[in-house]
Image (cartoon, rainbow, N blue to C red):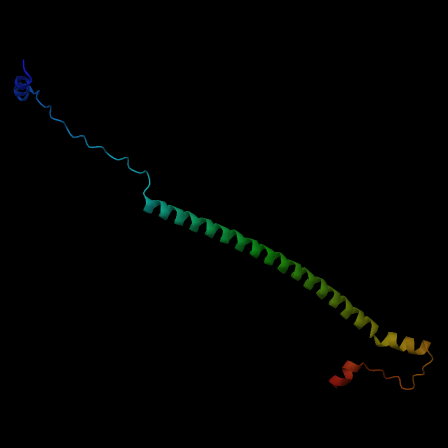
Length: 123
């Protein structure tokens, strides 16, 4: 066979082309989209910031409460000291005591009427 005859016979003998089925390749979907990642990260940041703020506020409140309790104790101690000093003032300003000290130091009482300074102002 000559080459020309082979060429002429080839188009007649071409095998049938098989139909190729197009297969759709599905791209693997992302588990979380970019927008969702942004929202989740923003929400997580907001929750963390809120929790840090809450803990910091609680710590400051606790510190202030401790300071207030300390000041209240100091106030109570000072009030008790003031009461004790007021009682001592009353005891030391007793007219009988003043008269006895005056006699010990050689003072003569010519007039037996002794009045307290507070009572003189009231009359």
